[in-house]
Length: 576
Image (cartoon, rainbow, N blue to C red; front, side):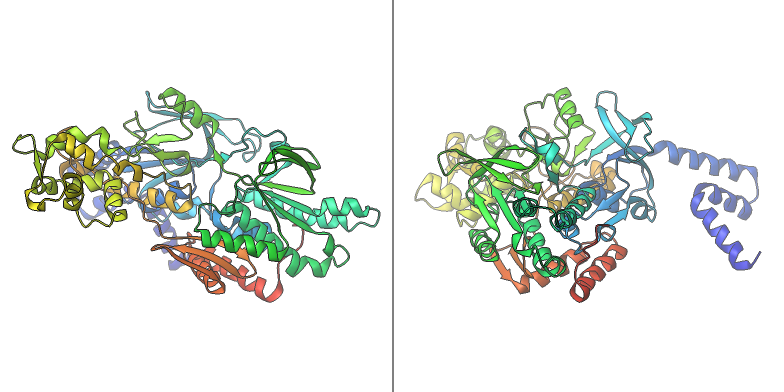
């Protein structure tokens, strides 16, 4: 055996059996059984002291948590029905061959194997959570594991729920049976095959003209970012690539976008909404706002025209894509019923992402929503904490002493001051008290309530986006990394209803902007500071951001290669 091969095997053995190898090296360097006994004891204690963390999911939230978890004090078990992370913002590009599916997925074991944390992965799905006994019930995925039906139970000390959400059909008849979804990589691949199937079917010589029009009518339900981006991608695919391959039927293609609201991209700036609607009209994409889908048959979509007296219209189609929002997964609904949250649409957590009613269970991403506490619920406790002298009134100086803690605990206070263009709390108190000198302002409890009565109106729910989920995963990992340190030296705000401070600062989402690709190498970008950019320059910004946000250098290189191939050779129109 060559010296290189021997070194490689020795290195691999050390990596795979790090604790055992450490003991061997220790015994080799130092003689004496006492040292060996000490080494075994230390290794045993290290294993015993580690906390078991179970992570459900391999989406944005769960993967971000795992990438940033660095503490060796945890033993981690990841459970997910898919063994890869998918860069979901590029799914519309996969549907039309602009980017290949393989280019936007990264095996989770590639992500975890380079970490020092002990991580195990099981390709299975959770079907029950028992928070009282700290157990998670799982079963192998029948679609992935050769029809296996094995069930197993995993114990935990901490549970991280990052399973995302499922498509919300609003119980509309026929949606599940007849519509495509765009939530997973498999969905995008299925849409891509169906698009080509529609063209191949319409190109057959014995198909009537009317049937060809129906087959080549692509209906997209939902005018949000996913629906708009898919409509734009499909339009480019048809007009830049497929028209050259199917010249006889190119004029029969029709794309219709159905939206129940009055505008597309309602969550974006009005300038972007107007530009998107105008561009789609110029491109020939039929945008029907105020059209609520009430039924989907095999060949027709029935819509209720909300702007036309509720008239029911039947629209023939060849392929329908449903992209109207997200809903709660069944086992999450069961868990919510167990913990008294059955009436909510998602798991309610506090500002530290801890599920309300469960001390060691955390929920991130689309499956959860932060239940931000209102100032008015704690106003009396805040007053009592700030009134150091128990005088019954608060001065500006006394209130200013706890102002930083208030803004950390209740971010709506800071947002309210910003929107009212007030520099500090003294301006707010002066507005409530009247025209007096700031330094002499004193408020009793009722006057403080009046001053802060409108603050809670600034509370907002976070959007269900990859950006939010990723930031939540990073935040929670940093909390776990510093768990013991912050137990001894808490860094969070004051406990207004108790003593001391919270361990950590609450999660604070930082909006970094959002994109809406509109086709034709034009993208709308809404960035922080109310900055809106629309056009070709924003498209290049979109390219750079989405390339840089890839989870690995491998996927980054593959995505850039796919974009380059598309510029030179066009999109792949094969059915594979």
